[in-house]
Image (cartoon, rainbow, N blue to C red; front, side, top):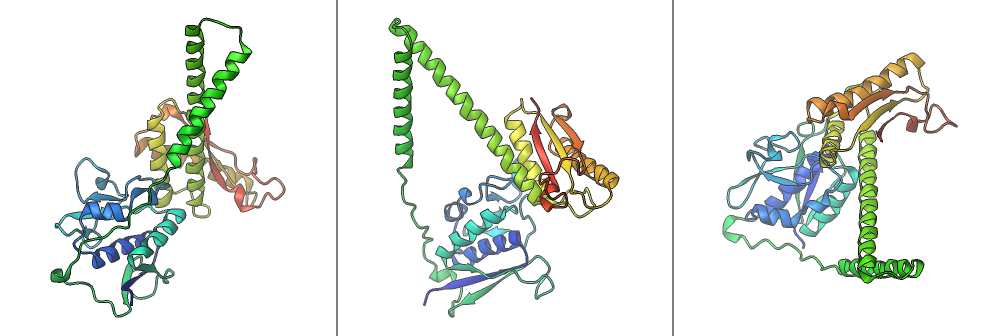
Length: 321
């Protein structure tokens, strides 16, 4: 029968940590490089941190930020003795990818247990299936990471770009009077540069929209303006985007549904927007003059047909032109 380990967790990120520990139980001789190949960073592209593992306590790295599990009993011990910290941030899509990916190593995940069940709150536990017994050091075998199939998608993209460039060039020649060859070449370069700028701006907006969606998924507690840990993780991602594009300026606006007192909702929406701005300035180092906070209460519902609808309770990130 196939050796298997089942992971029971109390929460999403703790279960992800349990998956990594299960892997090290089954492959205790693995190095950090083996671990990175087994669980590549692209499994978790929509989190606030773009890397799944760091050497614990390594100075000058994200290991010193609270986005990684850092307690002694949370760290992974590699086959060469290296201590490795696992990222805490796993959105629902990333976590589902991780669970599906882990199955190829004989690791399966049970449904989340109730917090009051066995073990500490927020912990995880492992169960060995099919009579599996973790290997002894003298019986260890090399770690095998399934080889990835090489994709030819890049070739088709390249051919498509070349074809598009040829079509644009021919259209330009047919629409303009015949000019010296050197002028035509210069005009073609200018047009190509404009296309690159347009794609760049589109990507800029898409990234901001994804961050806004993740921030709203990390809901505020009812009637409160305190940021949750998940919300702080998303704002960390937003800060990275703003540092990547220093020309970006944002208006962060809070909105509520029509439920409750209008004056209370107005103050609450202002406080939530200001909490996000304050965190970005004081904890992430974003310049204060690049941010605005605004609250609109229930005056601008997303669903005007139902002022009480949950989707009206939201925070929006708007680029200031």
